[in-house]
Image 1 (cartoon, rainbow, N blue to C red):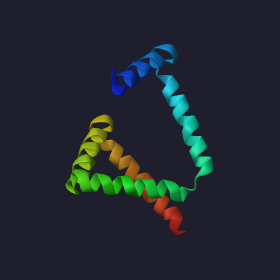
Image 2: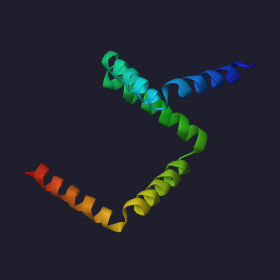
Image 3: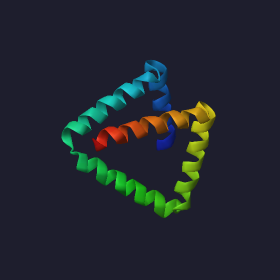
Length: 99
């Protein structure tokens, strides 16, 4: 049995024993622990590294593609009226910020 197979088998066993919500719970705990130990600079640094890696692997066109896909998904889910509503909210927020 390979290491990959053993890991998969262990993951399946844990999922069957504790359920899928278990992963969300331990993920939140881990995220909180890291947040207490690290500064916001840490998250900015790892985010930048990840973004640079993705850009190097896929190119800048990739971001345009995923942005388009995301926009289409939002439009399908919420409809055109959603954009009007959030635009109005944004406009009000801008007015309040300028006061």
